[in-house]
Image (cartoon, rainbow, N blue to C red):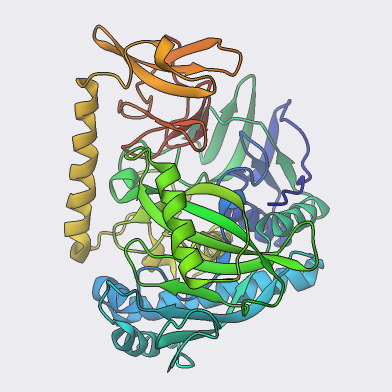
Length: 495
């Protein structure tokens, strides 16, 4: 899909003092920077890659208060008031995005439209339970309708969520970047934060030979790089897959569509980048734990089959990609002060498939915390919260992590680099060590330790993205071993 270059100030090359340093230039980091800059705070945003270059560039950008974990489940976990605040905050996030689009004149294809939740054939019909819980949460305009407005696909009865939205996330980030810089903020790409340390009510962010000194720091790196253990036990990384199919414009009704399968499917339309006569139908699903499967072609094939059976007008599959979703054990993001850290250190993580609205909630909530204002959502999203009713999910996910350490003693994927095709990677066992081995297109071989520097799991080769993925907590490294997604904050060691 189209990826506009997002303006920035290059790479950080000198020491800077500021009010707030934001690490991570995705939707959460950039929204927080924009709102704080709008309050007159001096902000500096740094990202070790391109601006918006990781998960925000891979989102399908459903802007919804129709939450993945369902309101009846959120009510069970967080009580009726917690579910109401979740609905309120996600609704406010969509409204805030629309306000920013209007105020900044951002051309990002923002559009209000209905969303439709329907029942997958293999699942129980939970629509009545969800309708009742959503009404209790304050979403009283929801209703059951006979079917979604799709000509080829009779969904059966479904739940209609009005006033949802969609947009082009990178075009939106481009507008946020422009607004941040116009308000005096600085944005630095390819600037890696090596260490974050608090002292004397200041935070020092070391970045190679330079540093940033700030009154507060916001770590918005999808999953925290400054928290080695606590938060990572309360969420799990999942890979989700997406295809983009060409269709003639007007043949499929615009809307957001979701089923209740596990993993569920999610669908929307966007404009085709090269033709006014066509659109792209974006369909996602087929999730699995990060680093715990390498059957991506099969998953893309399943998505295509699912789509062709329901949308008969699609033509060629023109795009395929994957992204990573952080799933909290209790369904809601972790936004606020970092547990066991100083009060001026904030984190944003646990997007749970609703990253665009959770990221915007983060901007609103953290701005209030930095400005010393009360916010009614603080307790609900508190990263230090303990939700006892999610204990079963907590134990399941952490037992899954523990099981991954058996990879330390298993054989390698192949016995030698001769078995690796050009452009691919594999793990090789050499005595007691495991070596992540990548062969480039010219046949040159690069060897790295396969041990993730976060907590010592063995990484797995991702044939779709050409990355090394950690099956424990979701750290990701490029083919040459350079880290681009935490919680690891350093590269794979040379072997």
